[in-house]
Figure (cartoon, rainbow, N blue to C red):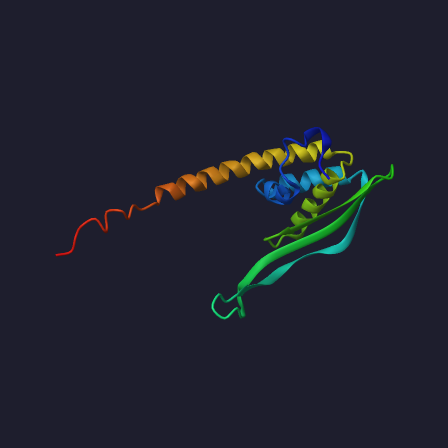
Amino acid sequence: MRVSNQADTLPNRCDWQCCWSALPAAEVESLAAALAKNAEVLDLTLPQSGLALLQLQDSALNDPYYLGEIPLAKAHVRVRHADGMEAEGGACLLDDRSTLVRALAVLDAILSGELPGHEAAAELLLRGQQALKKVRGSRKQMLSQTRVDFTLLGAEEDD
């Protein structure tokens, strides 16, 4: 579900976690706590954090192999207000902070369900989107500085 009054400016829901994650964790956690103060937050699954094995497939024989371990945290919550409005939200993050991933899940539920406080969650989302664009721009600039021109390598004829 999209927030109706800002549907044109908000990123797709699949990008929300990435945008919020571009901001300081303390800011995200404090907003989620403030918005959840007037609501009941039920953990549908307990927030978990730990290491997950990253499995890939060999390109030659198509055999699975494990590349290594990655930190992973996930949460799934239901936010219910006294007026009966409720929504579910979830988050999965390549990080080991269960408090942060739970806060992201709460914000996801509030914004997707247009619960009270969704305007503040949308504002934080847009700030995160701008921070993410800035980071991507600087990475793109660094990448452009490392480009190598190989066109001159084959220009000379061998004698």
